[in-house]
Each structure stands twice: as structure tokens, then as C-alpha cells.
Image (cartoon, one colour):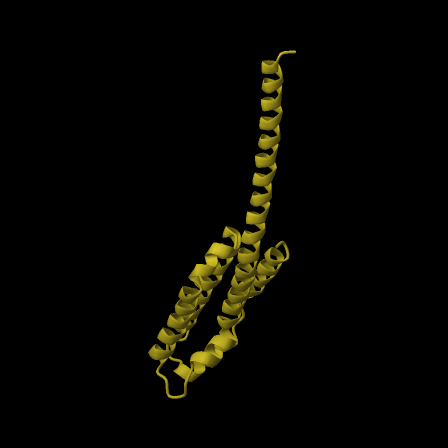
Length: 160
């Protein structure tokens, strides 16, 4: 074999070794990047689940009424405060949507809508009741959708 052939074989071998080096070092960086992403995203997901469960607990009728109702409050003020509180609580947690699945977020929106609808319906069905009576009526109501949404969040949480 000539010198040119040996040089050509040597170049092919060197290029193959360099190619393998870059290929495997690139995969290693990808794995490190995935690991770094998980280190950041997983705690944010956990926090999102916690905050959404807290939201659901805060919009339970009994909890909501305890937080909002004040003696001497007018009926209209109570209704407004309840509705405003439910909406404000959700607005405060809107960014959590980034970290949960669409079905989970949809459950949160369904709960919010049901709570608002039920509050308005209770006021509509009891037009002569004062604020204190309305507070008792609403506090005694139940919303099973909240429990279902909490269970769905727990199931999703257990997949991370």
C-alpha cells in the first residue's frame, strides 16, 4: 500500500472517532438538559397542584361564607362579595394552568362556574332572605364537583 492510502485510512479512522465523540457528547448534554428541566418544572408542577387544591378548598361554600360574610352586611353586598371572591381567587391562580393538564384545568373552571351559578341561584330562590340567612343557606350547600376535582388533581399529581 502506498503512503497516500495509509493517510486516507488514517483520516477516515480519525474522522470516525471524532464523529462518535461528538455524537455521544451531544446525547449526554441532551440528558443533562432534560434533567435540569425536570429539576425546575417538577417543583413548579407540585406548587401548581397545591395551589389549585387550595383554590378548591377556598371556594367550598362553608369556607367561602366564613371568609366573606360580616354581620351587618347587606344581601347585595354579600352576593357581590361571594362572586367577586371566587373570581379573584381564580385570577390569582391563572398561571397554574401552565403546569396542569387541560382536563384538570377544565375541572377547575367547571367548579368555578358551578359555584357562581349556585350562589346566584340561591339568591334568586330566596328573594326575601336577609344576608345572614343567605349566608347560612349558602354555607350549608354542598358541591360534589369540588371533591371530584380534588381527586382528579391527586391522580394527576401521582403521575409526576
